Length: 402
Image 1 (cartoon, rainbow, N blue to C red):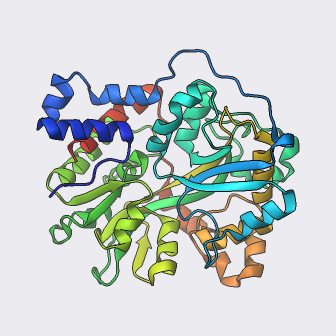
Image 2: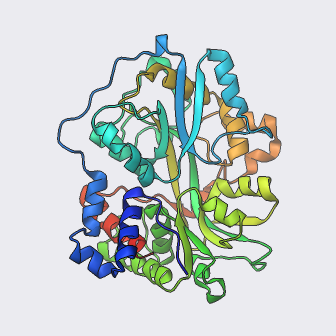
């Protein structure tokens, strides 16, 4: 069986070259001189110490905006329109080009990193990316600092999310939605359900399992299954032990696909019957395809994360982007989005607004998790640059062999 290629363009091209040359993973990594650590270094390279500068803001003369986001991540009606986005355009006169451009943090970064390093417009005025990738953009100087005067609704940000280690005071990023990584399964094909990550390795499911190309979620869930607290100062050995579990399941063919957001297509067409997934996607899949899948936080625990708005350094429409962010921090708008996407809203007041839409929403643990639910999940701790490189290299070494 030929397995799916990794989503990251750099890794994909190397895998294709390796297959053509019929090289083993050891030959590829040693014989060609392109080690997995080098791949990670290439992905993180700044191209120099100088940080790019932002262009002049032309929002006053250009009432347009491009927003790059993930799939199934904005309210949508039966005609494929986005009601809240239409309302924003009507209220502001700003025309928005909404693009589902992000399938995976790494693959998106690979497409735009060279332009970012030069301070060029990447074709998006705001992008929603995950905490750890946002940390990289901020560290490298690839984001613009917010003008708080244009975002008065930032006062509605959940206080616990205000001060994060990668952006103290939220000067360059602000949460869009939060969520969990857990497991899901096709209820008709797996009627007894799944309880743990270990259940994914059942031989009866060989070749029908999908996992995420997001290292912190896939490896994070395996580490939690191993009893490791991923939010604490875990060791290199803890990480490597989880990598070896992952490697084994890839090599024996248990895992069929390793993907970003496109994993939803594999579930829908039943290429995969169970997977490591993101929480809200399963609700949307069920709404669009019938009530076929069940999501659960595994017994060992799940991950919790945030995706965040940022404004790329090269955007000449910064004020327009800030007006969009401000709009989505209105509690009523945030509640409308949350009711559709089923992710954790970061907006204070959205819970009360959601109750007015549908009283049952306030008990939805994917949107408004209580303490019991939150006790089952951990946030993957921030990594040092050295850890990011070494851990990323280990993860990519498995992808190369997939």
